[in-house]
Length: 269
Image (cartoon, rainbow, N blue to C red):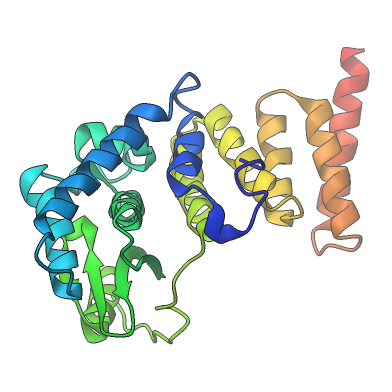
């Protein structure tokens, strides 16, 4: 993941980054089948645009290929299945959560050189077509429903159960690093809530590959190493956290935890 992002963000291959994340579950996963599948869908979209490329036509063509021809849809019945976040599973099963479906939509758009970007609203992810002519918001989780800004506000209000003030920043295009980090956060929450601690640890290590000084993730790795019985690594993570936050609010608690780990190690030795 570090190698993929060791370049300007615009040059990052988002498909390969998403598949790298999927190797947490599928360590032998190969990129080429997914890349080839996206190439073929882009060819189908391009064929439908042979006589025009107006923004509405581009959005309609991508949505028609994905949601009508190939039957993609949001997974409403089993939203927290981790397979909804793994790009290979999303393409094979034709279902996923908003951000994963949006990545599929964006990557087809990129292949036909359409200006389609990810938009990270609070609690929901969608895409927008944005050029000098038009700005169109599309919700891949709801089979390509087209929205305006007020429609986005209504959607966020319905999902959160309360009014949420959305600013221009909420509607800004997300960079590739932020998209992958948001995918990581979704997976981390799913794995930790179901006590899949080793998988959760792998997700957090991926976050730290992209944001190595993220204190909250370092603290979480300490807890996970401890829960998995890797006390030496837990102690090292606590010490790293303390280096970043020399006087944290929970300093006494962390020091007590560190001391308990040292005692446990001493007893084992």
